Amino acid sequence: MRAEVAVKEDTAFGTGIREHFNLEPGTRHLNHGSYGAVPKLVRAAEEGWRDRLEANPTRFFADELRPGLRAAAAIVADELGGGREDWVFVENATTAVNAVVASLRLSPGDELLTTGHVYGAVRNTLGYHAARAGARVVEAVMPVPITSGDDVVEAVRQALSPRTVFAVFDHVTSASAALLPIVELARMCRQAGVPVMIDGAHAPGMLTLDVPTLGVDWYTGNAHKWLFAPRGAGLLWTAPERQAMTHPTVISHGLGQGYVAEFDYTGTRDPSAWLSVPDGIHFHRALGSERVRDHNRGLAFAAGHLLAEAFGTELAAPPAMLGAMASVRLPAGVESEGLRLRLRRDDGIEAVVHRIGDAGWVRVSAQVYNELGEYHIFANAILLRQLRNN
Image (cartoon, rainbow, N blue to C red; front, side, top):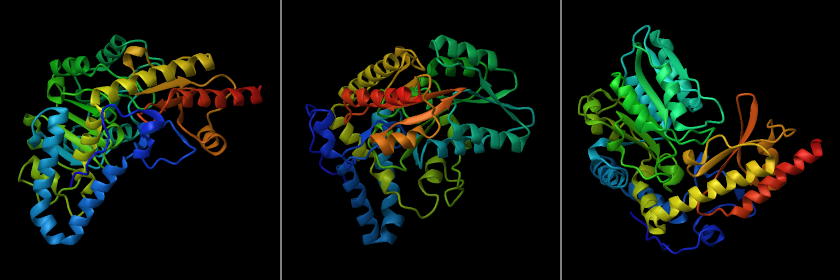
């Protein structure tokens, strides 16, 4: 159902490419990392799958869905590494983490290891399942700002114990926007006999990936963030030796038929987002995948330093640990409470505002439709609030 992508690798980024999206004019969209933005052509492909489903629902679900999903999984494997039978679709990365943790056989006294920068929904998932089994969650202490990947490795090393039975780490942290040294973390944990899952919610499309080479047991990511797929298109890779024990959150007709069969059909639902993932990948490639990644990383780096210099503060992670997002501490006198909504209402700016520890921070994203001037406007909006409060 692929829509023809009418873009070329030399298409100008910034305002030159916004015509390919349905983004609201007059708003500075600096928060691609939270919810993505689906190109018009990918939305058209998704609608095409819905039309095909509605034309003959019985034929679609009985005969066309599984082959379509496996064809889509082959494109995912070509993009992210591994074989198509190692990749399955889920609603999002949080769903994948829930599936894996629920598949573990936990016992009283077991420890589930993560870091203090873990995504909130994943923290809740770990805590829920640990409490039910009499296990506990251990978070490696990582201060903000993060100074280096070595510090992250050492923090995790100190948190590992003989009782650790599972570890999950972010590839790109949500709040601090830091790329963690997942290869080193996975190697250390597996040497201790601890299986590892990577929450790569932000990684597909942001980073160059060959998942099987990372040395992990499970890897999940969202295609809807940086790979231009529709929302509801999450991905889960499972190492072959872990597939028999890994089950979806919904147990359905595929139980006992293998990993792929269990995940490919958990009940009647709209699978158009999953089937449209190849269209998001095609759009990304049409723009030039390396060009997209280089642009976004360079813009995020420039935006982060612009904001940190303007605010007289600091980035949450060093340049070597930045991808297509940057988190910057708010300047003194600017209260984070309610700031996100005020920025939207008064300035037409969408950005993440949150607290890390006892300080307020802002996280900005960089996507192909963004330009550096937008971050200048954002910086001025924050500084004006600082002046008013002083």
